[in-house]
Image (cartoon, rainbow, N blue to C red; front, side, top):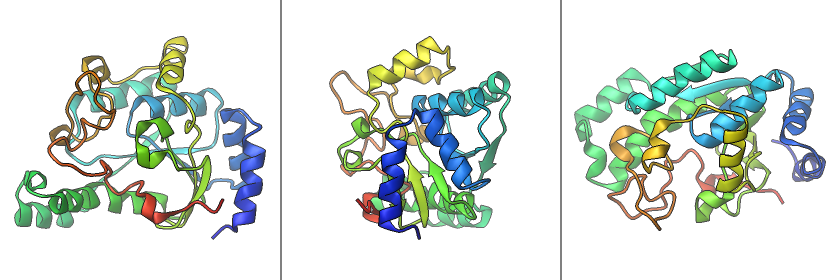
Length: 241
C-alpha cells in the first residue's frame, strides 16, 4: 500500500501537469505497471486517444460481460483500427456464469438488487480483479459530474478493495468539455449516444434517458439504488487526503 503522504505529494505534482504529462509521469514512476480500463464510453475514448497519440506504455483492457450492445463491439473494432492499439479482453469465469444463470435465470437481475449485484460481480468485478493483478496504477474515465457518489472522489486515490493506486484524469471535466474534445479530435464514439444513451453498460441493463433525467438514470433503470456495479464503490476506497 502506498502511504497517504506519498499520494498527497503525487497529487500536488499531477495537478500541475496536463493529462498526457501526468500519465507519462506515472509510467515513469511505475514502469509496466500502469493499466487503463475502457468500457468504450466517451470518457474512455478520450483517454484511449491520449494514450495512443502520445504512445504511452499503458496497457488498455476491457471487460466483456458477454451481454454488451452490438454498437459497443463495433466501436471496439473501430477504435483498434483507428489508433492501432491493443485492447485486451477479460471475460467472466465460465463456471461462475453457468452457476449464476442456473441459480437466478438468464435475466434474474431484474428480480432484485441482490441478484443484479451478483450478476455484476460475476461478469465485471471478478474479471476486473484479475485484470488489475500485478499492476500499481489503474487509470479510469470517471467524472465527478456523472453521479453524486463520484463527486467525493479524488484525482488520485488509493483503492483499498483492489489494492491499487487509482488515477481519474477526467474527474473535473464537464460533459461540455468532453464533447468539445471529441469533436475537435474526431474521436469515434458509441452511436447509441446519439439516441439518448448517456451511460452505456450491458444491453439488458441500459436504456436511453429522458430529458432532465440524471445521467445514470438509464443504468439498472428498474431499481432505486446508487446505480453502481461494484467496480467503483465508494465504500471500498480510502481517499487518503
